[in-house]
Every structure is written in C-alpha cells, then in structure tokens.
Amino acid sequence: MNMKNEYLKSAIQFAKEAGQLILENMNQSNTIQQKLNHADLVTEVDQLSEDLLRKQIKTMYPDHWILSEEATGQEDPFEIIKKEKSGIGWIIDPIDGTTNFIHRIPHFAVSIGIVNGGEPMIGVVYNPATDDLYYAVKGEGAFHNETSIQVSKESGIQQAVLATGFPSKEWKENSSVSKQIHALTGKCRNIRLLGAASLDLCFVAKGLISGFWHDELNPWDTAAGLLILQEAGGKVTTRCGQLYNLENRTLVASNGFIHDSLLKLLQF
Ligand code: IPD
Ligand code: CA
Ligand code: CA
Image 1 (tube, rainbow, N blue to C red):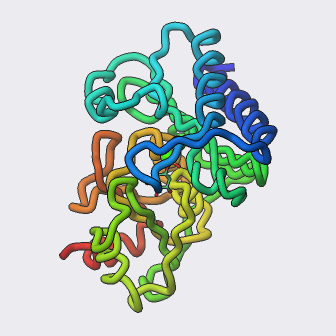
Image 2: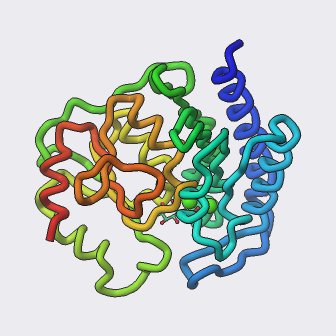
C-alpha cells in the first residue's frame, strides 16, 4: 500500500472511531459551554472526539503535526497554517455542526484533512448519524461511501439550490450573511442553512446542491471538504474570485458552471 492510501485508511478508521464515540454520547446530557456567544457552543463530546483523534494520530504518526479546533483555543489558526508549510499535517474538526449535535439533528461530521507541504492531500468527512462517508485523495477522484461522485451539471443560477451559514461572530442583526442572503433571494432556486460546513462542501461535491458560500470559516471546517469538492470537479475560490487556499477567510464553492454568476451576486 502506498503512503497516501495508508493515510487515507487511517483517517477513515479514526473518523469512524470518533463517530462511534460521538453517537454513544448523543442522547446523554452533555456539558455545553459557550465560546464567543450563545450561538457558539462546545460540548464535552467535541473534546472527547478531539482527544481520541489526537491520540490515534500521535501514536501512529508521531512526526506529523496536528491542527484541531478545541486545542487551538484563542490562537489564530490562520497564523498556524501560515507557519506549518512543511511536512505532513492533520487538520481536524472533531464535530463540525455542534449545534445540530446538541439538538440531535442528525447532520454533523468528523472532518479530517491531511496536508503535505501545505497542500491538501487527503480529505475525509464522516457523518456518524447517517453513516455517510465522503473522501478523496489528491488526483484520485472523490467518493461517497464506495461510489465515485461528481458535481451537478446545473448551469443556470435560477435552478441552483445553494447553502450558506453564519460565522460564529456574525450571529447578529444586519450581519453580512443576512445581506448576502437578501442579495440572492429570488435569484436562485432556494437557499439552505444546514449547519455543518464540511458536509455543505460534500453536498456540492455530490451534486445535491450546486453552490455554497461562507465567510470566516476556519481551516478545520474546509481542509477535508475542499479536496473532496475539487476532486469531484468543483471550483472553490475566495469571494474575490482567487483560487481558495486554507489561509483564506472567504469561500465560494460551486459546481463550476454557476460560479461566475454566484460571485457576481455576492459582490456588493
Ligand atoms: C460551524 C459549522 C457551521 C458554520 C459555522 C461553523 P462548528 O462549525 O460548520 O455550518 O456555519 O460557522 O463554525 O462550530 O459546529 O464546528
Ligand atoms: Ca466547524
Ligand atoms: Ca467543531
């Protein structure tokens, strides 16, 4: 087995182990803490999942670096990403969609992106509640469970279902997201706020929706889904139209065909 496939196998195994642990704790009364505000939450299960993932990675790959949401605390993850350009690194969201998890909405995921020299090499997004596994290896296509996936062929924005979400610090009246939604209302088929950015990217990859945009995501939200979407034929840029990388703070993702129309509607 080549190294890339070995890393993929490990990432899937770790994501499934963390997923199992999350499910076991789903119907318990877990401790919930606020981070930035009453909409930005973390539970003890986020921490348990992260501890398990970090332990497994450190045991199997002691030379690899790890960037994970809860361990990062108040540090700026973009500064960490800028410094970590060499070697192999694991970028982890132990539960993406914590609010859904707390409310027992079965739409959340363990997200694991592996980068090599700063470039995404492997992406694994696993929703344990539905047992949906999305993954990709750079240059080898994207998969949902065992099936190869591609983006939708939709070329008109009027037929496109899109998704977005509120950055934690933007949960307030007159936020830029409200203005963006306003700008797109009536222009596309509809807009969804599904609550787990990693799965939004996988939904574009699978062609379930045709586009997704979001401001102020963190690298652990996008590292895995970015590669899965690119390998499924999608396009990911900043809001200014530059190719997206993990140092960027705005993201516009699509099937490629509606990309220019979507970017245009988001320029104001
Ligand atoms: C959140 C989810 C959500 C997005 C938020 C993220 P978390 O991640 O991805 O979809 O809109 O901005 O913070 O906090 O549940 O890991
Ligand atoms: Ca997240
Ligand atoms: Ca999280």
